[in-house]
Length: 104
Figure (cartoon, rainbow, N blue to C red):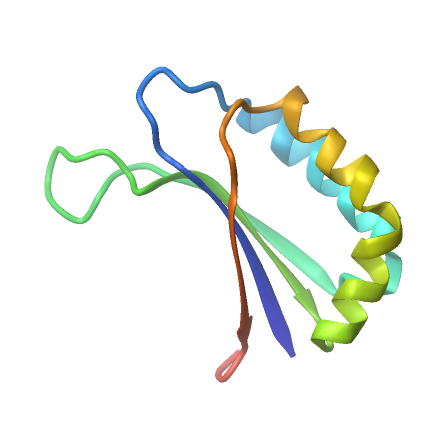
């Protein structure tokens, strides 16, 4: 099992519509990817590690898939539509990481 993390760094003055991300964008990703997306989670950053500090990431999602090949097969054909939707909820550039799920 792999996890694809898409993280949006906190940046003063940046726009991030959490409601759109949660209710529109991520269901779009799931619908387009089908079974290649086993499930996903959505996080909303609240605070940094030290009291009173901003979160490192304002928002993020984690997409779980059987393998890198499965993820790429589900995402690739729809990449233009999925990436094209980013402008509808943020002006931030995401940071992406693919990890192996060691404990689930």
